[in-house]
Length: 359
Image (cartoon, rainbow, N blue to C red; front, side, top):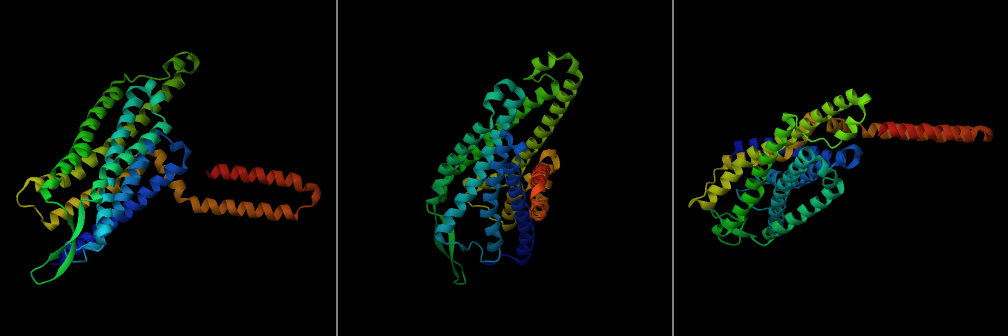
């Protein structure tokens, strides 16, 4: 009736670590992209959307799991409304994260393989509009879960009665919805991203990537050496970004596969498979997928790594700016009227320079 002690310990340790690391990491991604002007690119807009979707999934899945493992198996502690909302948020986070990964792959494909078109198509404003559309579509698509679930009564052999979050209709009537999820948010995104990354790899590693500014480089012969070095550095940076994004998609494919297989099997099997340890394994794989992306960004992207470090140093920089302003105020009041204007101007310039260097 209750989860085994070993299950509680193992699930509690793994899920709490994944939840903590994932929540902090994804919130940091959102903050650094939001606050760092150099990271305001179409790709990073999609990464911000992905991080937000992962935050929603981490709050709506691992967090309730940490409570559930200490209750009776299948016991719902959130009530009827909580049952509906939590499942809705879980599917919303999953589906929007999948769509975000698909669209940042499309954006990278356009930028690498069609750079001339990308200058007008792959813009930050367009990326923002697409992201809004993705979230609106995700919300509309997942809304039925608010009406397809309810709490029902479950009675155990010893007479214990609990409320369980379950289906309103017979399980087989949800088959179309499950298959639509599988195809729209797993199979199609993976097939599409695999094709696009193959095309991107062929362009990058064959050395035949179209250059949007080839004419400008060729017209300035005195800077051809610097242009070649700049082109090589740009290509190397692009390759690194592509590797990072491809790993993100690859981990999504691998870590979500156990859960997808589990859902497909139970959708068609006469007797559902409900082994607690396998379900825990599937859950942990899904949670890891939502927690691992910030670690990848920090490990593989120099810009993200620097932005993370600046974010962690923010309190110190703020204190330094506060001390500078306090010094400016005290000194300006202590000066006589003749020299106050010049000194105030100098201190203001120093303050602005300190702020710019901190940023």
